[in-house]
Image (cartoon, rainbow, N blue to C red; front, top):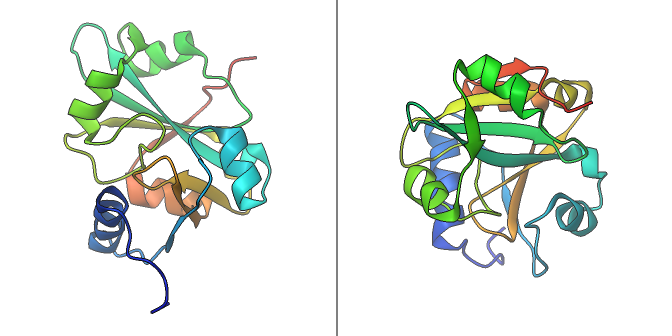
Length: 163
């Protein structure tokens, strides 16, 4: 792919983090936004369920960042999430997300974070053949399999979908 434009700094950081873990997923940058699950699915040409959206929560007592990799078709059950984390949780604001991950909301990848994160993976993603995850910018994604997502993040697969 010598004719491809170089990756933006944040996307390159993700590519390097993936390579450091022994994965060679190729990051794709799109001219259109892939910030939301619907935008990403439209740009890629896949279903919304195949988007592994990255959501950052804040553990309220310990102030730890919690990364949830959820199917783009699902909402997260925050009570189930709190039970898994072992303390109350809340949504993280943009400053907390940037400080703890090193990335802006809309482009948070599953790897390459500024600090260690508790990582939980939506069990519904495991039913899919391939999924797409954010790659550091609101326009960058990469394709992988659900078992690859577990391997690259070390995350725990859990039932976190809101019914």
